[in-house]
Length: 258
Image (tube, rainbow, N blue to C red; front, side, top):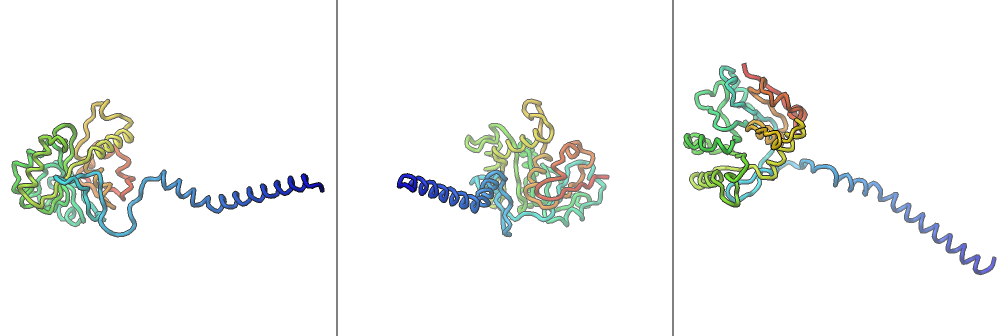
């Protein structure tokens, strides 16, 4: 074979060998590449190592740090509804690891029906003045309770020092060690999106109003592994939310009032 022919054959063989090597490398790296791509698409999962979690959707007053605490294995979400009167569920509620209440729902005098423990209390910005009327009970005696306040608009603005935010700031100064958090703006947007995903309606365009119960359930789904809801059996929001029965944080069941 003449020299030009041999050179051409050698070049073709080298090219084929190089292509084969590249294909083998790609084949070997494919599982890693696929895993990397999937990791970028999937939402971050909860850490498997035991320890406190950082809940970035809730910002502390006044330093703005996220809520950090251990997840709750069992949670009791207690409705403020009058359905709880005469239920006799108080002792059962208090057996939950964490008890979530709403706004200024009382416990004193109603322990037999609603229990007496309050791990977290989710509060509407409009209800803050109502809690201040009985501040000695809510902020002086129940010092181990975490208060999480939701609201939109200028009154909740941290940067501009909205009226409600200033009130919360004053409370933390009056009672050092009081644990007060607000829903972040990003978390409020997320709650709106969940509403649209579940109902097919844009909250702002439809003029809908999200209740404190809604925000409490969103928080519970993040924090709790198992949730028992008390006194919401006849409430429309529970029927309208399949995510409450299939939440990523765990299992949700309902204990209606009498």
